[in-house]
Length: 209
Image (tube, rainbow, N blue to C red; front, side):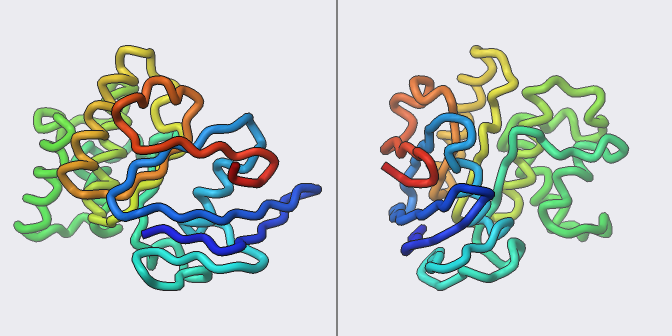
């Protein structure tokens, strides 16, 4: 599902090289100190950064230089990237299209995505009326609505308190299983993922150990 073959990326005085194979429906955690290259690895897979050389294969196709929107990838960041002037429903709907002229089928898909993360009753609210955990649920629903087979997460729950983090991790585990997603998640709390992931990868100075 995810194959990186001798992918080279240079950042300032660091040369990073990634070789990676992640199987379909595998759930993998990525750990390492700050500045090791964890986020860069995700950005290369998502297409937000382009390699100097090497190949990035996703879903059986060489997608090394495709634009982010062309890749079979959704990405959830630490910051939920919600628009404060839009409702929960509108923020989720951005996973389908940039405008809000949704047809009946698309509205049902938005409602289903909201229901999957427990936000049925919050569709008309603005982000300012939501808790931190609820905002991340909106961002997660938007990712699910994009219906991509690969889900990348860059420390998405690190700003939440421990109890809420575990609640979100349980929800994420459930959704990945139901939708048969391949998941790669950067985290500083790998112990919290026990029983929820298949393996842990360590990044050190731009290399996967």
